[in-house]
Image: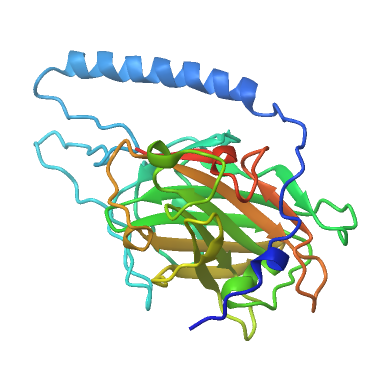
Length: 319
């Protein structure tokens, strides 16, 4: 059983500063929305022209991928993915193979497609899905030297068993020597999740709020790992009493690391359904002092994110 840390000290100073809003992707987002609407209209016209004998087209992100039908009426075999040794996880949906590069999305309101990746630490199989970024600096420690060398892009998906995330992190110095519930003090990733926003949406942590810490390890003797925290009735965030079965895989890259994670819905006490909306904040921690255990900076996808206030987190909608 893990030892519960002194949370008054462990989380002291993690209330974020309020950075200025950025508008980098807004213009592109409007243009993309117009193009998407025109594309949907064109598909509808095409389907009507083909008549009853034509193929049924399903847009990306729905429960089933679009299936091409040959002239003889037979469908080609869908692409199959093999499970990564030791992971027990394999892709269960086919992504659009010829889609254009998905847009950057700096939104607090995130949408997850129904898709199950191969969990091997390499996000290459996520390439057809839109990606998001966490560009907002929401915390800096007194030891931070002012350097901004951290950038994180990420994807999110789901199926009936898992909530999936993939990350591509750029960081010029990799420093992680912590494990268990202290990995946030090194280079790592954190998710804040509120599974019952309609039930008790307010500025206080409760048992339906969770934090997931994801560590890539040190790519030496310290393996990738995960830790699950759960809110309490008194507004604290402590080790989840039931533990967890989160699966993590990570790889070093030339300028940082990549990481994939599969979070069982059962660990969150939630049954997923299309259209479900939950609270979500996606954060990246930076430690540029090898050998030390210091959280020096955090970036988030939500500019006003505060650790203990679920009303400052964004949202995640299951497509």
